[in-house]
Image (tube, rainbow, N blue to C red; front, side, top):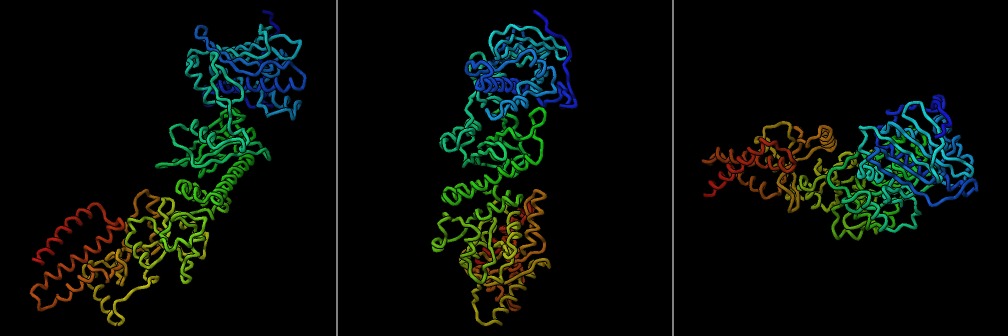
Length: 630
């Protein structure tokens, strides 16, 4: 070998970050990503320089990876532009320079953005190799091959090489502790992870490993629904098909492409991590993109590819700046536009997938004012509207779903600002039945997030009053009194109130007596003032527990219920001359307490110990009633 030069690698810290061989990158495995990326860049450079007539055109580009277990080497080869000895000195020895900037300036407008052939990425080799050889032959005519060799120290040798064709071989002499990279399965996995969508075939022992076809790079008009679904399946196998997708494609004010999918969420969703993959020129960078996708969209899936997203020195993490925030805003706006278009053009499909879209939209609206402006009219609620009301639903609504705006058009003018809602059809069944008997339409806000979303909606519509079905409701009911005699009505009410007061002996319970119509309206209901209930629910949510029943609450007794009527009859025979007076008083008290406990049970207001007591008390009460009948 003819030694051309010996020396030390020049690192100009005034021009570039100091290189720390084993600290720049978070994981050693990314060395393969960097070296293959460099090879792809070299191939692209050769193509563009050949188009300008400055070098040989050569064969179609390819990257080859070879494993030599005997010599413990891993070789990454390409048939790209290669380097002259002067270029090796400039791009490898003087790490302060990056080939990309100068190259782009010379061949501006010729093609895609180039990351740069050699530079910091090349030095990731020394995370796994004790020695690196670079055999390279420039594609420019009249040049000779070059061999560069370095053992990881600043010392290197530059010799005449023996490569015959244009391109570069990077030969890694692996450290003993890094011999895992001599395993075919390990390298195959790394190619699939980082290089799957690179536009150049990557061979491993003569087999093409990567797909190459980056679907997001295509024009959306040229992609079929089947292709979108198949691409999703390849990225996220065994997770079902997506609900819908959004194809991002812009080159101004920055270059960005991608495909984002709304998945079919089942069970709990992790809103703090993410499954969207970030690429830079089809090279996988990271699956942590919190900086460019807001939290409420993190559960989305898919790909975002942009050379304009600023990455740190290792291309492994984002650097937050104005550009990143701008890209984030663009992505959010595109998603909002797509949702609006789907709602307007395919209302049936939108309604079918609403339950899966709702968490994204509701959380996003609460956290992002601009997003809220886009989607506020797209929010749907299930409604109790019956068939006779269905003809009043607009063509934009399906089945039992409605927007808040259209719901208000169907309200009684006297209550046009009162929004009735129910958060649990089972726990609030009694109160819901009461409102249904009043022919009132109720919105069903039964998602976990609705505990926060309803107050947010109310704050946005200051003229509206959101009232849960089991809040204090007497003032809004059209009561069907049995007697037109106000004095008689008051007398009945006071007598029942006295019975329950005596039986419950609890000054924190406000007892109301009402005549409530409807077959399914229970004998008694537990009611809470709206604001008190919200505070109670919010406290439970923050403490990660089920809401408990506050001490101060309302027991509304329905005196039209069969049980309450029977109780009144039993009370009337309880006179001083009756020999069973004491027994009747005790039985009346037991029945009143039982009615109250059942009302509490309906709203989940019983502790486990109280449930045991309630069961035993039920048996005893039924036994007492049977004895009365015998």
